[in-house]
Image (cartoon, rainbow, N blue to C red; front, side):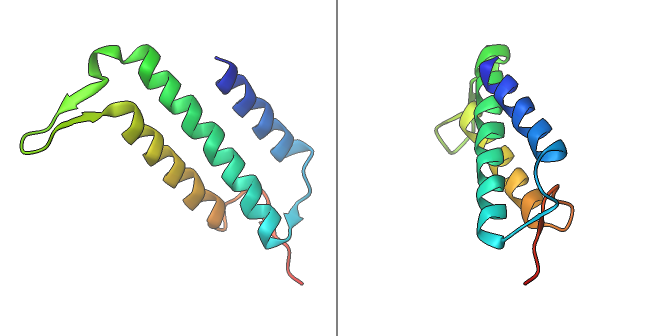
Length: 94
């Protein structure tokens, strides 16, 4: 629950208090922090609310930990969002 509150507070700050554009390095760092918070929130949500599906058996492979895969997918999706033109903070042009 704390991770969701931190993610929500971070997004409120990003949308309402952050500048419209940042240099590339700082924009990517803000995106990385956002992606990490989203990953942690997703992993805790899967571990808490989907306990029956925490490990999925895949034929031909071993058991897969659902929380890890969901966390990785969320991390990649948020980073792709931050690297796109739809990011809430744009890259400042020099």
